[in-house]
Image (cartoon, rainbow over all chains, first blue to last red; front, side):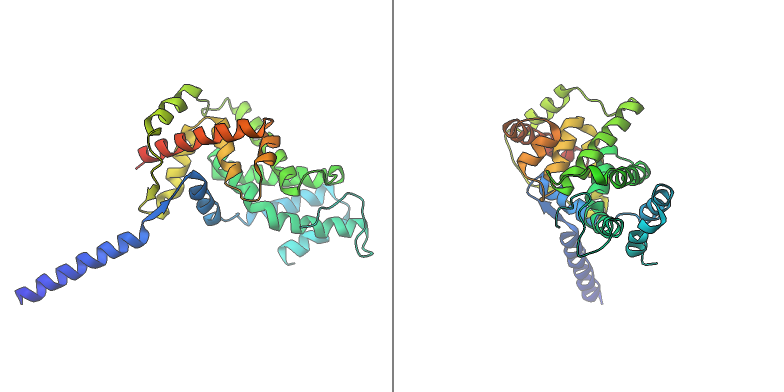
Length: 73
Length: 186
């Protein structure tokens, strides 16, 4: 029983170490780090919605179709 | 992406229709780069959203002024940089740092080019922002521009109004300053 507990503790420890090494990331320089960060950054969809409304105010009706194209409606 | 030239008709489409289609492509292709620059330069997601909206709206208004002499990406970056710098100036921004700050940090890491290590990628964004906030506006901008692999040193130099050699030298120092500040954010 005691041996089993020790074994499971050891396994837990190994799993923890594996999780940490999976989460750990190394970047050779700032450029690489910032590229990774940029790739993780999503553009909020609200911007396109707002842009659509703003552009409608300044654009003649026949030139609005690209917004439908962009937003899918 | 083909370089759009104002007023040119493509495949028989009306100029207005062409502009619409091209602008949709332009937004799809470049919005991430512009949003990312605004986000990390301004350090505030809401302000970055506003800035991205304003930059693309300006581009939309000025599409007829684009002559294809530079790449679309560079053209958009120019609008974005001017916009963000104006915002910083008008806020009387807290991000004004004496260049001596950077020199201190450069000296601290001058002996090493050790890799930047991050245990938790979810916290990475906050650490990066803290690090960039600690740098001078000039270093921050150079690092953000060089991180975009689509830009050459010559294009970066043109965007910041300096020679390529000056940009290379400053980038070398900016990377060191970044590494030193980044280690302190742990």
